Image (cartoon, one colour):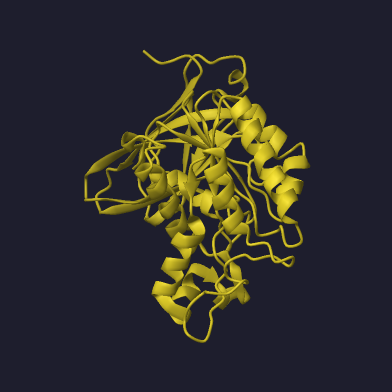
Length: 350
């Protein structure tokens, strides 16, 4: 028996040029979409569902072709929801994940994007056998951050929050409210950012806060006050705030280390922003993901040459913003810390 409010897509294969939906009985918000949504193409397979904003669970059956396949899935504004997943010839692989559908679909102050749910089944050799989409209610991880965290709209940029969903099962959803150019003050003040995020919080939801890169002239007292206000706002809604220190800039000393203020986010007023985050987390009893320390270790490990691939040095001479590879590695570091600190159950991590 099909569930009300769901949409079933059957036999959408990589070989099919066009597949039309058969719709289950729908709720009012989904009736207009029934019978019109489609998957098109072969490499990639692109699917669209006319659904209302909300959290959706996607059940995909990959593979089934005569040859081996390898499929990765992105959703909405280039969010990685499933890493490259191989299948042997004739083999099918079942994968389930969630997608946060909202308007705007990417950065909260960016372009609106297309209404509804968009999925792209790409990868080295994409194969999609069937697809089922339904409304879901699961715990959330909400993200407050800047351009190093956000759902970047175009290549080659990628924020670590954009890569986070691929590491999680359908038992958790990621709602990324990070936005380019935001400081702790502007993120707190803009109605589309922290106030909108706060309105989405349900009891027990995690809210990860990484804001520092644009606090270039923020004094210590103001910076701490802004983060404290966000911590208190999250707790007031029943959420669980987690402070995250900023990713490092790729700015090496002659000795091959990042032991300098540019790399480690000491701002123009001499405020050591990661140190303030660590101190505030201890004072507030708030969990801390020390992403500054973790990314410093990784960048120094790779060295001046190898670490270029984590950032956009080759493409843009950019030592602040990450490539898809860098964002993916940094998202893995975040997930590892959340799991190690038991902030997310092991069963929610893919």
